[in-house]
Image 1: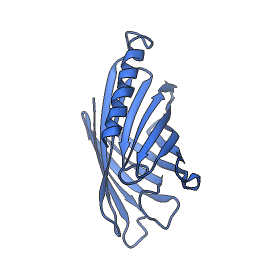
Image 2: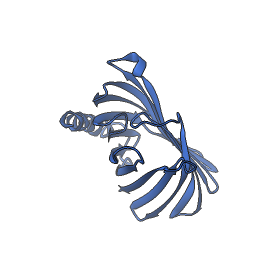
Image 3: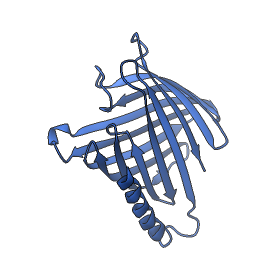
Image 4: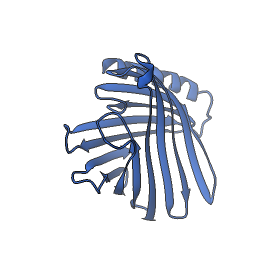
Length: 206
């Protein structure tokens, strides 16, 4: 875990130096932190935190328990955005994975918004450094309707290896609300199962 934070600090130092020169005076810092808590029917519960920092088109973030338990990852990426009627954002990223799983990864996070609909997706392909057959594509995607600014609800899917599941792609429903810089959401995966997996998410951004 110590190496995770050391790598993040190095990336932040590089981004601070570069963004001070390239993006221009209108670039501003933004920070976000989210914790997803997994409540699993047949395994122990666990938390998955993510912290991200952006300045202009520079992006860095760190994750823990995302690729595997007791595993951290650190990422650097580039923000793109555009559109008016249909607004879009995409951040391609590259990162390193270390802990119980080790490797390098290529990933993305992006969204597409139109009217009161929003599509969000994040994914990463981890190239396992120990066993190439353990390389894996992770994905989390949401399709939401946003009837008012502070509320959203819709469909969610995820593909993960962090815990055992009989389904390659889990699917479910979610609902979330926000107030100022705070946001919370509840996700229910595989609601047709007798004991679905539940994820509670809380986040802050500023």
